[in-house]
Length: 173
Image 1 (cartoon, rainbow, N blue to C red):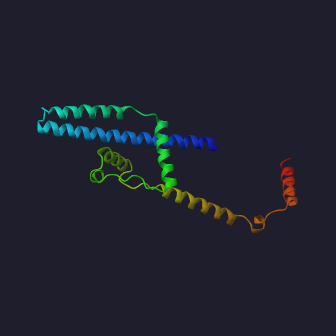
Image 2 (image 1 turned 90 degrees about the vertical axis):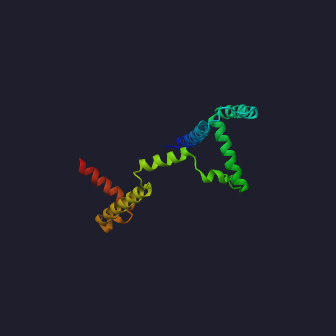
Image 3 (image 1 turned 45 degrees about the vertical axis):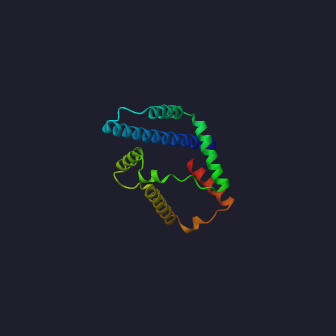
């Protein structure tokens, strides 16, 4: 795999991550709206004053503007600008409001729960597999080195390599 393929894969991975974030945000927003509707229906607030109707119209206009889907390249550009600004200015990312810290979005909880269920309730052990592979590789290398006679481990001269090649070639015919 060349660097071009890796760059494309990296870019696609960024896009997928952004789309997943958008989906989680939308799901959280849907959950909040359904909870608000349930609260309204439970309270029996079917009649609203005129100002609330105007506020509802303004909110609907804002939601419509927010609902229009920006292109992925626009989102990538915005995120890259934020990352560059953080990198060059040393500014910390915007702190989430305390209200959000108190009550995490339902979609996030669901996503965390699905990841936990998929893993059987365990933490992912990605490094364990890498450690096992590395240990097996080292063990195989040591066993192979132990089986090679000491005089063969030294670097052979070009003349010795040529002589070995000719001898092996002649042994074939």
